[in-house]
Every structure is written in structure tokens, then in C-alpha cells.
Length: 227
Image 1 (cartoon, rainbow, N blue to C red):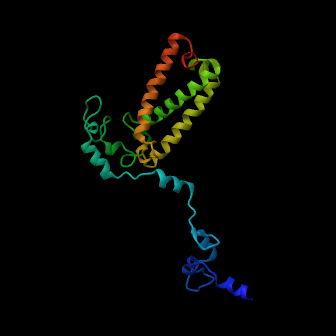
Image 2: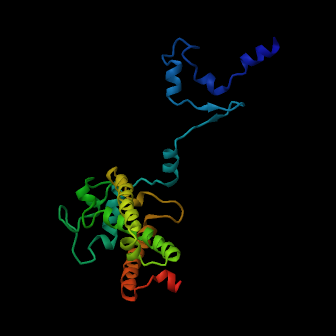
Image 3: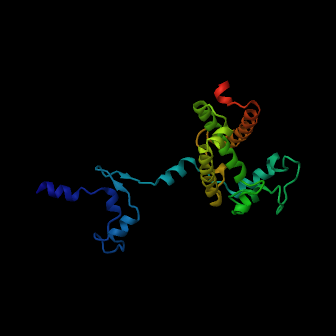
């Protein structure tokens, strides 16, 4: 009897603050509606545990909001934004170069034509990621097979199949955030920043092209013979 009374009174404080509809006629929320609103679960001691989704957890750890004011400030103070590598001054509505505020996914046009423009966010990002993956794949595959990149792609045929399947996957994974208004600068985790990815991608593109040209001249796999 005493145990029953104690059990009926030992209610967590969080539940007392938010009674269910069955306990109070003033609340219009049913039990099903209460659960669907994502009420916090409780441990045995009555301490609330918040259950967040994977996406919310990742966003909290890696995502940074980039505002239009920050973009305009960088556009005014950053010397590289005042003229292109060819010396052209960015102008609104031009084909190339466009002002930063117009070419960024956060504030510019979110269309395939805009993000795939010469100064858009997609080309360098996708090519850099494919080049980094290509260098890594070439180093392992050449060590294992003793074949050049050209032989792996076209002589055997299996390499070309993997490459054709991989390009759309990398491109799709890179395009979707941009179409949703998120550039690569909006994500960072420790040393993994957009700036580091850009420089690694540029070096990988140069390195992968150098690898193809070198193997074309020496007719031998570079990684298998020299490393």
C-alpha cells in the first residue's frame, strides 16, 4: 500500500510542468499530439534527455551562418574580390567576373547556370574533390595493379566504369547544398575548412594532370616505380 502511494507521487518535475490532456481539461493537446511534438524523454531519475536528429547534431557542430553583411564587408575589404586574376573588375550582371554577393549561393541566384558559371561555386569544388580522390585512388591502384591511370581506365575497362559512376555521385553531393543556399565556406570542423579544401583541391588538380602527362611520356606507373 505504501509502495503504491509513493509510486503515484514520484512524478518527475518536468512532467508536472507540462501535464497531458488526460490529466488536465484545460490542455487541448492529446497524448498522441504530445508525443508527436517531440517531448523530451526521461531517465529513471527524472532528468530530461533531448533526442536530436543526426542532421541537427552535424549542423550544430559544423555549420556557420554566412550573412549578406559579412559578404558585402569581405567584398569591400578583400583585395582579391576587387579584381579577378585576369585584372577584370567585377560588375553586377556581367558574365565574368561577378561580385561576390551575386555568385555566392547564400545571396546570389540558386540555379544550375549560376553555380556552374565560370566563377560559380560548383566547378572548382567538384573538380578539386574529384582530383583529390583521383590522386588517392591512383596511388593505391598503381601499387596494387602495376598499371598506369590510362591503362586502368581504358585497357581494363573496370576503372572507367567506377569513374563514370563516381563523377555523378560527387557532383550531386556537391550541388545539393549549393542549391539550398549553402556554400562550402559555411562548413568547417577543426582543420577541415573550405580554404584548406580549395588549396588541396587545386594542388590535387595540378598533381593529377602532371601524373597523366608523366605516365604518358615514360609509359610506366609513377607510384609503382618511384614510390
